Image (cartoon, rainbow, N blue to C red):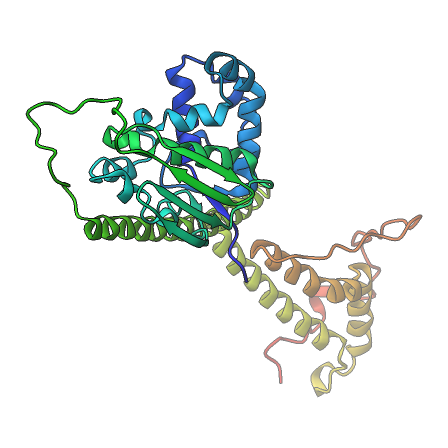
Length: 371
């Protein structure tokens, strides 16, 4: 699976700093953002190429015409040329300022561009001359024209980091040519007491620093993605817990009392089971000799009481009601059966005074402990 093309937020941080240096009002831009602005100002952050290109289109729409009229170049060329003074690239700014010469700056263009493009762009046909470098880069300036113009501009201004004149860069459909001249008068004259006879940094050490910097950026990018994934998991768990807490709160039962309520419901189920045993005994004919004569009267009385209290329906529905109540308290889904249409609800008839041939206290009632 091919990794998605990512662009460094060094680009967006430089553009925002460039606008701030000009005194531009950034409020119209922030109103159209649907992501955190601080993320775009973090030089170590990365963003999908298509999203960052969309941000660049937004910047041109709001500020492009005014910047072009005042600078004479397009917006991203102006931002790229101003990069040496913006200090928007983090550690890369400090590394570039200790490079001994222009040739060393362009020694490994793929390593330098890897600080802005991930995965590292593929370089083909790299050729070095005394004051010229040509190569072909696998980066589409047709798909991402704004980013390509910015990268071309920063390749032009690299010599300014070490006080040298700006280079000349041609970038056309992936074919890149860089030309410079060490003999030109630099824009920034070195201090007279500084000895500039020899390079202050060897090319091998420079390559090592650039490789270490690129590796550190990749590791930081991987660590940030891992943290973001863990944060997303934690946020999802927190939302799930909040939903359960809200459901319990809406039901009127405090979370700390759920276990106690479940315990009471289980006790109620046990009591109902014992009542079922008593009803079974009441319905069973007595076989003891001392109560044989009164068995028919007792049986008719028991059946009348059972019928009046709708025990048969209660005995069939009570276990389901107890089970549903315990499931609701545990937060489990419960299917609620809707009553049939045009069906009147059943009402348990009240217990009425029954005609008895003999007083009930004179009847021998079977005991729960009788054998």
